[in-house]
Amino acid sequence: MIVAFSPSKKNRSRKRLILVLVPILLILAVSSAALLTYLYFAGRQTGPFLHVVAPNIANPGDLVRLEGQNFGNERGLGRVEFDGIPVTTSSYILWTDTRIELRIPAQAGSGLIKVYTDEGVSNPRMFVSQSQLPNLPSGQLVQTIGPVISSLSAEKGMIGSVLTIKGLNFGVNRDSSIVRFSWAAAATVPASSDAGSSEFISPSERDGEYELWSDKEIRVRVPDGAVSGGVSVQTARGISTAHYFELTNIPGQRSLISRRTYAVSHFVSISNIQATEPNAMYVWMANPVESATQRNVQVLDRSHVPLVQNYGGLSIYQVEDLIPGFAFAITQSHVLQSFSLDTLVNPDQIKAAPTPLPALYSLYTSADSMIDPALPGLDAFVRQAVGREKNPYRSAKLLFDALLKRFDYDFDNREDDLAKVLQSNTANGWALVRLYTAALRAVGIPARPVSGVVLEENQRAWNHQWAEFYIYGFGWIPADPVMALGGGNAPFRPAYSDYNRYFGNLDDRRISYSRGVVQVLPMTPNGQISTGLLRYSLQTAMEEVTGDISAYTAMWSDIEITGYY
Image (tube, rainbow, N blue to C red; front, side):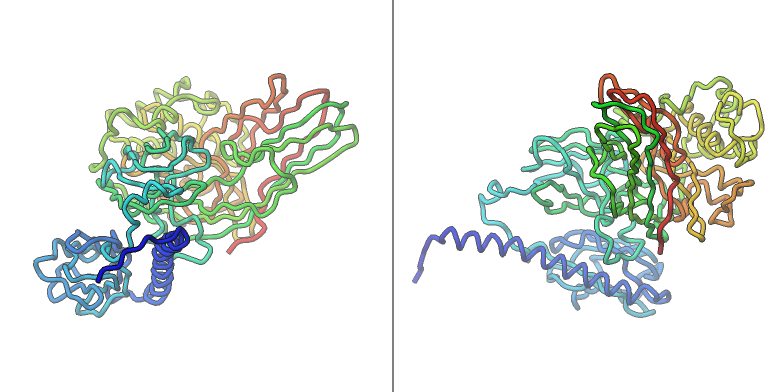
């Protein structure tokens, strides 16, 4: 006997809720199991250790990649089991000490994957069979209110390549919505309970990596710090299901080795005001910037509510109707995580960026208010250093070595006129970084100065600048000429005893407040802007006044480290 009925709206809503909750609970269980097993097995160095299963949601017969260590250079008697089901010999495609590729057995269901070798059994990793996940009823897709990805324009690509995402409910305008790529540290640094947003990396709006955003289509550039893994869309209405995307043709390796968490604070005080009402003052204060090596930037405290939370990395504060004798201070405190970065680049594997070039090529190879690649006298320095070399990575290294050979670092040097610096043999850190960045841009390599602070063990923070340059297919690569020169007569010392590491690598004892010049635009048509240079933030203005304010005194503090672990 067949009984047919039409479910009520209440039942349909309950069913829809169950279909949403089941995958969420499954993902939470997978994440918890991954954390516990990592902590238990991370100390084992002799037996096999399984870092990554990619993709970890797939169908029987699909290709899956296992990454880890101590698998053995040959399979021999080694094997992989899916929840106790061994993989047949014909299903293995590749077996190396750090990587195994195979096809999923037909009988495999959701469960744990383990690698067996003569040295023992690996830690388990969770695998989910796509066929066992619940599906929304037919026709219900168009009724969802959150973002839904229907397809990616490519299953694989390089850092900097274009990826088109099609689907529904992305929003007509991007606003605060983002595209989420798997992040480089997910496979190299153990997760933690405060990891939060650090499990993904997003394209940079400032670098022009969001090229198109509409309700049904998004076009982005694959960002620096991305790795093979899930791609999803996050809007105010939720996060879409992730689609797998593989990074290919990477000309080297990059690893996030260690992590430190810092609490930082700074302030500006305004006093000695001479004014009559009506009037207003706008203050731009720098925030630590999110990047592939600086994550989870969160506000701990603010003395005032900003008019604009984030404008190019700056918070904008407005104070109205200042009067004589009135004084005030604006303070900001943040907490963040800083990661050390190691890179290993194979210059012969670098491929030229295809046309049209990413927007950052135009942005970071042309002149701006602080970097001039056409600086008089720079061309001779560049030609002598680079010669006929065309490879961007080798050219960057030649320019770096030539800079170190030409100049001695002097912490007390206050000469910022680069034309005069080029005629001498000493330079301060800011001059060295500007010269190096300008030289890179002169040969067509995207480059920018980075400004912030470096930390000592006594929690003292020193204003500091370094540079980074961009290689298509690899991402941004740091270079710190001051540290590479051993710090000279600076009061701080390099964290690495091998100074050569400061080309391509980065320690975790630094915090960045700006990456590239932050051009500040006036808030009002007749506003008067106060310009200057904060050594920890490359912003072109700090305050703006409008109305009858004839004088005031602004005192900007240095960055204070209030805690770290």
